[in-house]
Length: 248
Image (cartoon, rainbow, N blue to C red; front, side, top):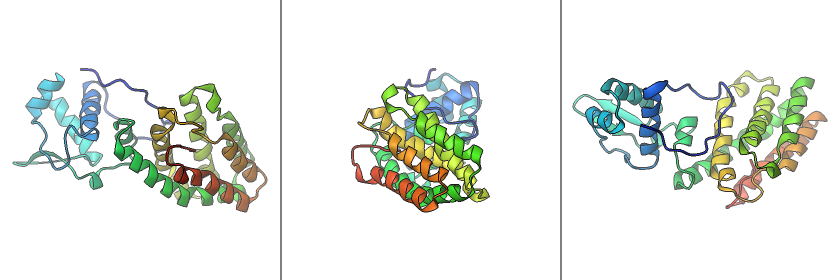
C-alpha cells in the first residue's frame, strides 16, 4: 500500500500533531484522502474494518488505530451497531494541517477554505503586526526582516519560499509578547498553507507579494505600529480581492 503522490509542503516543527508511524500512518493518509476527496461522503457508512483492512492490505488493528486518529480530527464517528460514518463537513477540523493536505488542489472546498481563512487572517494579523512593532525584540525584528527578503517567487523553490513565509508570520506572532497570540502559531501557519495549496502550487501569477512583506517588516523595524497594521491589512486584502490569485 502506498499513499497517493503529490507535492506536499512541510510545516515547521511543532506546527501540527504527529501522525502514527508505519502502516497506521499510511492507513490514516489513504482513508483521510478518500474522505477529503469525497470517495466516502458525509453521513455515509464507511466500509467495515475487515473491508478496509483487505483493501489497504493491513491488519484490522491498524485500521482501528487509523480510525481513532481520523476521529480525533473530526472526520469520522464510530458507535456499536452504528458502524463508522463520515461526519458532517461542519464538524471536521478544517484547520488541521493533515486535513488540509488531503484535499486535491482543485477541490472546491479548498477554495472556500482559502476565502474563509483569509478573512480570519485579516482580523488577526494586522493587530499582531502592530503589537510586534511595539514589543518585538531586535532579534525577532531581524528574523522578520530576513524572512521578508528571503521570499523569492522568482526562484521557483516553493518549499523554501513557504518556509520563509512561515518564519515571517510565526515570528510576528512571537514578537507580540502576547502568550495567547503565540498560541495561534499552528493556526496561522495552517491558514498560510491553505493559501499556498490554493494558489502557489497551482502556478498562479504573482503568488506571493515580496514587496508587501518587506513593507510590513520595515514598518515593524521602525517601531511604527500604525504603518505595520496598515501594510499587513493591505497585503492580506489582496487575497480577498483577487479571485484568481494569492498573496500570502
